[in-house]
Length: 324
Image (tube, rainbow, N blue to C red; front, side):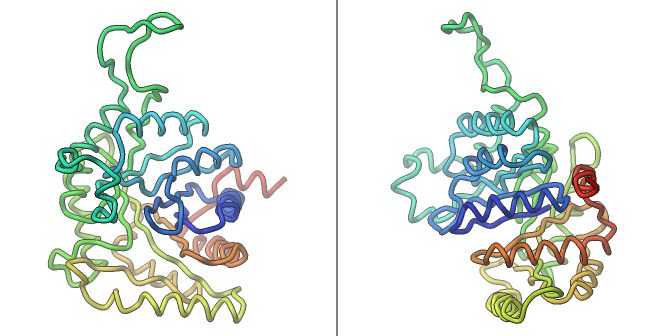
């Protein structure tokens, strides 16, 4: 799965999505950012992407619910899923980034006191599409009042972005899928990997939905096998600029170290990663501010030199396209 961080050229982002579909990745997600250069409305972007892709699943990774109205967001998710012919994954989180700066532009004082998990609960209820009352008159005759379009089973495609003990347990107890990024609450763990493994174990131990649940883990992967000298230098600078934050907890949180190096080195690290256990889904996160050629090189190396060594095979539609 590919997770795309927002960047300045939306045309390039669309081309990366198309490239991900062509090489056979199963899911492509867009990260929503507020007050930062990037994509501030993941659903708006994915609505456009539904018309340029055919097979790949599209995902919001994630929409922070802190600034959203639950029923309106459910309407938007339903609309984009209808446009995609059922290819949308619903990724949300309880967060409200940059809350101090956005305080005067967001909810009223009373509304800001609402527990964010109450908002998620309301959002899930809206997705379920229960009738809100008796039929109401409309210009088209009586209709059942519920969130429209109603997509049966859309709630089953909800992924909750987590990183704290509460978010992990909350997702498990409500039968939601779980997205884990490259930052997690330390909670006394010796390393990022140990903390994330503990979250995964807790999720599976308390999962209350059908089946065994689903966990996706994000890893920033920068292979250099086919990179030019210039690309290697820029990737090295990027990885080094983020190294210090991984060496000790910061404000009670741990950061995962980027996977930078040759495909062989990256495969070795993934093979020894306790979170990559055969049940978790790997999310490949692409960094900000690289060029389209950079992203193509990274994806090509991952597709041909990294993933096959982990037992991955491309989506069936991509294989048929390549054979044609």
